[in-house]
Amino acid sequence: MATRKMKQRVSQARTATPKNLRVMKFQVKRVKAEMGKVREDQECIREEESKIRGQFDEIERQCDKLKEETEMIVKQSVRTHIKLVLMFNILKAREAGNSVRAATLSHFLRELVSMERANNASSDDEVKG
Image (cartoon, rainbow, N blue to C red; front, side, top):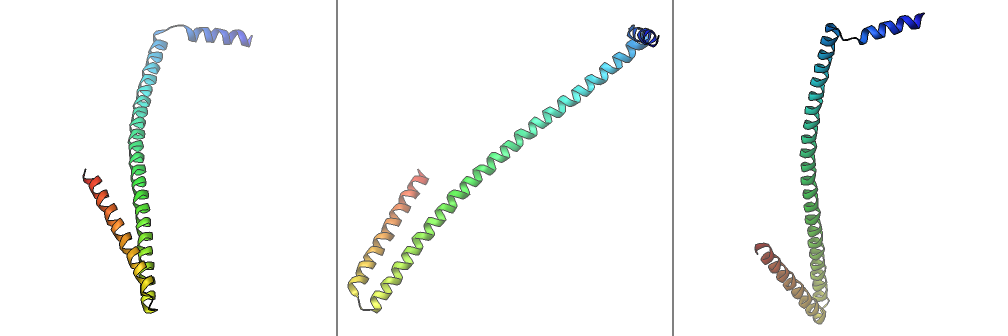
């Protein structure tokens, strides 16, 4: 018996009465409005993702630039250290009276400095050109 009454209620609920139609139309409008809001939210999320992706690319570019600059500074520091060691050895050779060694080291230091200047000049030309 309980099942017969339930079937009757379900069949009555399915019938299209004006009240049921109004309720269904209202629900459809509400769902469409919610879908519109969701669509707007998704578009906003896409825009933010694009903006963040651009910022990430910029940060990555800056990171690469910093790596290059750091590498250049390290190389420059190594060259400076080598020149200081040469100068120190030149002074020690002069103190010891070893003029041949001092002259050889001085010549090597001059060659090293002239090579650096030539490299810097060619680097400057590349940057300007």
